[in-house]
Amino acid sequence: MEFNTHIWEWSSELPKWQNDLIRRLYQKSMLENIDINEVIDNILHENGFSERNLNITPLEKHHIPNKNPIDTIKITSLKNFNNIAAIEPEYGLEFLPDGLTVVYGENSAGKSSYAKVLKQSCRAVDEKTKIHPNVYKSSGSISTADIYVQQSGTESIINRVVNTAPEQLLTSISIFDTDCARVYAESENEVVFIPTEFKIFDDLARHQSEIKQMLLQLKDELLKTLPSFHDLTSPSKVKTFIESISYKTKEKDIQQNCTFTEKDQERLNQITKDLKVLVDSNPVKLIQEIQRNINDITNLKNNLQQICNELSVEKVKEYVLLHQRYLDSKATLEVLTRKAFVEQPLDGVGSDPWKKLWHTAKQYHEIAYPSQSFPYVENEAKCLLCQQDLKEESQIRLTRFEEFMTDNISQETAKLHSQRQVLLTKIKTLPFTKVTDTSVRTFFYNDSPELEMQAELFIQSALKISTLLQNTETDIHLSLDNIPEIDLPPLKEMEYWLEIKSSELQHLKTLAQQDNSADLLAEQNELVSKEKISKRIDNVYRLAKIRQEVDRVDKAIKSLDTTKLTRKYNELSSSLLTDNFKDEIEKELKQLRSKVDPIV
Image 1 (cartoon, rainbow, N blue to C red):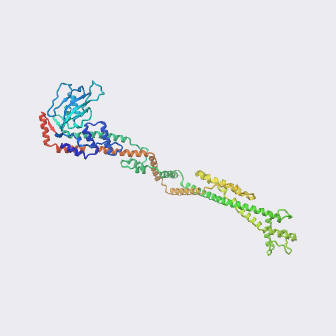
Image 2 (cartoon, helix red, strand yellow):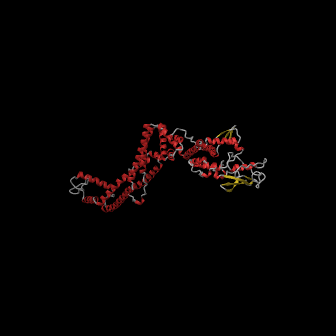
Image 3 (cartoon, rainbow, N blue to C red):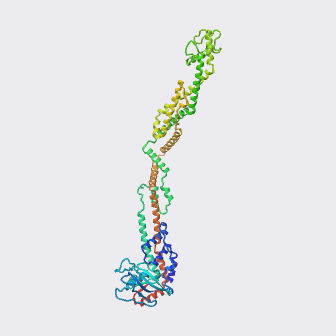
């Protein structure tokens, strides 16, 4: 019992999976595949594989075979064999609770079959015992036997299904036969005796070694699934990062090194463009060309701005109203003119040519009669044109003409006509030719077709309005309802375009001065590598995950090392297998008439 107490205390300090494995080995000295797989799942789960099922039943003290004489369990009989070799159910064996029971019989009488049932049900170092059914009966029948036992004065029956794990109640009973002797015999004249309690170390070490090999195979299978990144041929930070990925790699590290952002794409585009300029183009010539285009587009924008200002809704409305006022005033003046100049000797009196003649005569008056007011008709005054004496009729006519010319309606009409002419002059001098004939618009169309289209729509609508306004010079009537709506020019968009081009120009000047082609090529390689890996970022995550799984498997493999088992075995054997114990074993061997030296 001292052995079992030490084993119990030691097992309570072990990892849960190992404690569970000891429990399984006490219940089944030879584990089945399902047990092995559950133990592997337990080991992997405790080493980080949360997706693995945990199936652990802790070792209890009653799982360890108890050899306390007070609670000794004894087999009293074997009965009711069903489908076990050729033994009939009515035959069985009886054992004395105390003393020695000898079973003997002829060959093939069934002695070995009874022994095999006992070896499977109890504990034996030979774990390869196989019980075969009755070949003369249907193979579908289950092989069973009843084992009658006695413990602490109480009798019970164990209904045993053969070829299954040993019975927990019988684990304190050891069975020894010829096959078991082969296990103990290591070499000639040498018998190795291992106390039954210590056999758990051997079973544990053997199963841990088997499981270790399975996990090594699992590790190899995981390593075979590692994704490769052979497309990263050139040295780069990304390539170095991929090669350095381990179980310690975090998701944020992958995001930081393998995500290709819009900013990265913009930078790559710029670098590609810069390298094309430095390698394939003449930077100086390109700078001159961009500067010329900026200047031409600036002039185009200013001309469009001027046209837009002069043909704005407010300005057009102002002109139309002025034109209408002029036409109204002119119509009134014509009525008054007919009344003032009716029955004159010549036609056309009051017309524009006549008015010009009148103003010219008035200017000449300042020379001929500087001290007299116009028209001067007193004291033998002369005609300013023919310089003949003015008759009374002529004096009256000149006076009437001046009164008409100084009338408010006449002055208002002249003023409105003058104002209208000023506006018409501005309209006539608008830079339509400059905006339609400039060659920079071809460049503008290729570089920004949408802006060019907007500018063209504005120019065409502005030309229509300009033509309508200029036609009013013939004194035709014009209404605001007849004026089409003008399209607005893309002035703000052109201003933004100019800012971009100016920035490009400055960048190009700096680029030409630095000429850092080597640095740009290196940066381009980094960005291209980053772009490539970003498209395979799922594989990068998978690589990191597999590295983590391999590390967990390595930890699981390390936990299966049997060095601690050997150390504990040696510790217990040194402290418990005393000289007195060895002497008792030697006496037993002598009584068995064995001429060998025991090794304990």
